[in-house]
Image: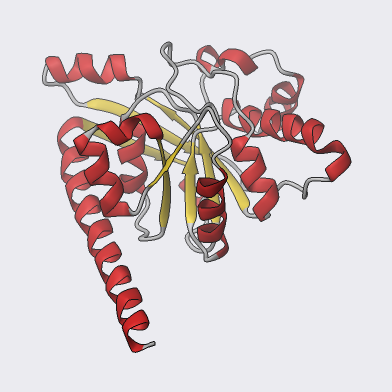
Length: 240
């Protein structure tokens, strides 16, 4: 029994050290390549379980999570294809990241995410499931909606601009820093799923999540959800 607790203690010590190392490296990196502007940051709770849902236009966004959040319980989901990359394997190991099969029913990965959420972790997830090649919102998959409804955890929508890979690379080539803006929306929750209407609910919840994100983005980046009725409702209710 004592060995078990010793192993668990060592695990958490190593995990904390990994988070600290990543935070340190990312802080330095961002100071060199980007200027980050935080908008409505007070909307973001500082403690407890959270699901941050955001658009996904570039690889920079993964590092941005660790730049912005001073927490050591970030739950990072990484596409299985990146397991082949030495950097992403190193990165995932330092932050206890979870590799997931985006195209299959990866129940083991989902169970691990739910377990960490129940322990008070914060999940950063892009519902689109892949990077947008145009910077505009793509049609999302139901994974984020499922996790939010299953866990009952508060969702915080986030809209980021300036992270599109093409623009970041162009600025790097000319030794320019990239201006990144991160806008945080109002927290909300989703009701639990009902067995008989599960699929319809997941679709509705996914659209809700994406419209909440779209409302935080410039009109030209709203993509697939630009004309969605729910987005128009949210924009009409916005104080701006």
